[in-house]
Length: 216
Image (cartoon, rainbow, N blue to C red; front, side, top):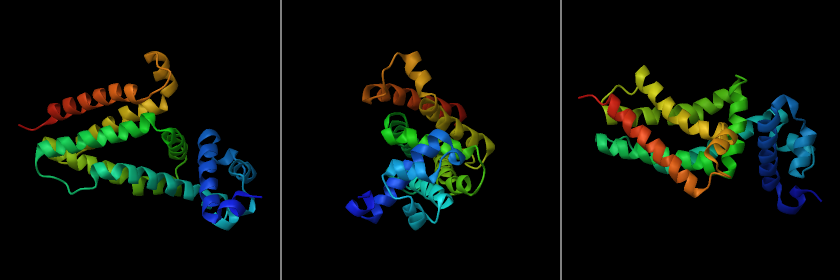
């Protein structure tokens, strides 16, 4: 009896996406067969065509799934209107960086999402365009807006864009280079205590970067 028979079509759809995310992230899209995905999801191979129209549709569904999950997680920190007070903007950036960092460095799902996205970024096409348009550009523009308010700089300036990428990049490193970080830090894992230490570093770096670029 397949997962679809036991729990319904939507459960099968999600199981296929979750299986594909792990396999695509670990091996790359071209190296993974629909049979492998169906087996990992404990689903009938025909369910891939039924739910997604085929492997390319499943790939896009994976991108949509990741974008929605990350957007929903980050929304509480960046969903409000852009403030005018520099101190409020600074506090909102602080909260956004902390929320992003705690999710990325310690969430079980984050490793799967990051691996999938990094694979896709290396293969320009409609999937990476979708991820950029719906997730990366929106989050980056929002943080640039906050950085601009906090510093008095043009949020669309090259300097601000690069500064925000550097803030996000430092957090991403601790996910991408996780085995190296664990070895060098003598950590068995990144749990709540380790995440606290990293968040303190990220917040300190944020304050220093804003102070260095604040006009006046």
